Image 1 (cartoon, rainbow, N blue to C red):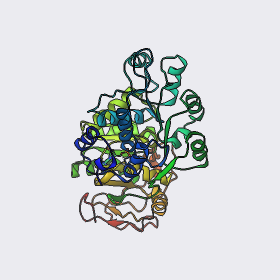
Image 2 (cartoon, rainbow, N blue to C red):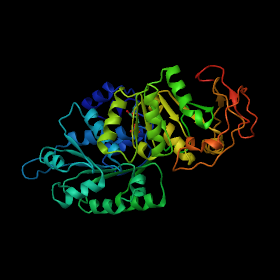
Image 3 (cartoon, rainbow, N blue to C red):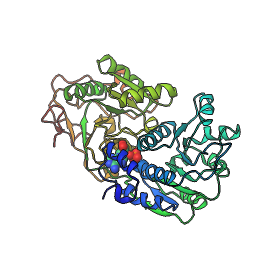
Image 4 (cartoon, rainbow, N blue to C red):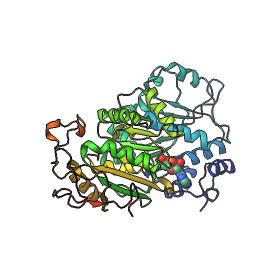
Length: 433
Ligand code: AMP
């Protein structure tokens, strides 16, 4: 199947081809014809499925097919509104709108909080056909009457489950009250909880449901790998893996902001350009880190699970779990950032003795076995006992007295019960397959 056979206009198909896509992903193949027909849609799809193009492409088509019906104060009104839970997601969606719409005359704008409102007010005075916004800032504008939502023809709620999780339901309801009743509404969510169903019932009229949720299953294009390593030697092993294998664009996950900062600083000291991104960083710092990471200048981005939600970095070659997540579902989200939409990726986990139970839980959830190996030079010291995982401090911060000294010479087969399944790796940093 091609994008042209889905009914998209040549200018849109051209942009998609230039972006390098040859055929639609399953969510695109299902959603695009429904949206082109003007029907409401309930989309079950998470990040990584190609859902953004799934709604952006047909929206662009519909807006160019029918010119603006009304004008406000002599200029074209805002005709499509895309609501996202986070600033990062708003920025990414708007970038997609610009990219896929580059051969069209439509203008887009993104709007989110945490930055000066005045440049946004200025921009709203010009032509804006498609507005991508987070709910809070949009409401600020609505209250100041700096935005007019009375001519919206298409509304998208992207990652609606996360918007509810983040407590945006009241804001969303207030925004709905400002929109025309006659409109097309598209709601995307990775999960269909009762809350989402209630929201969908109140917003959508005779919707078509399309679902490609890949929840809790891992993509076979992702090579998963786990190294057993002593908790104090994780950073050393990570530096070794990155340098030895010449990894670039490595997204590394930690459980805490503190661990993210510490690791980024230490990698930098090891001569590997790294930055941390988490909730305590300013929007400007987060945007800067993401930009340098995307353009390939920054070798490593260290992120917490929350900061990473909604970040879309296409065809990311390496994801590293420096610390396994406490919640097994987060593992699926983390590694879903690699090997997306058809490109091969590699997910590597560094597992210390404290985390064996977490690894088992992940395997149970994903119904897959993740081979656990050790690398020569990084053999496990069998005398080190598991310690509870404390989220406020990094596992590596354990008091020195509690950490056994490394054995002078350890084999590759540790004797502790917890590490019983570790196998030696044959090649340094190889895929071990
Ligand atoms: P999304 O689920 O919208 O976050 O998209 C996930 C990734 O897939 C993005 O990096 C897109 O650039 C990429 N993508 C979207 N559609 C396609 C396609 N038809 N073929 C290949 N890659 C795609």
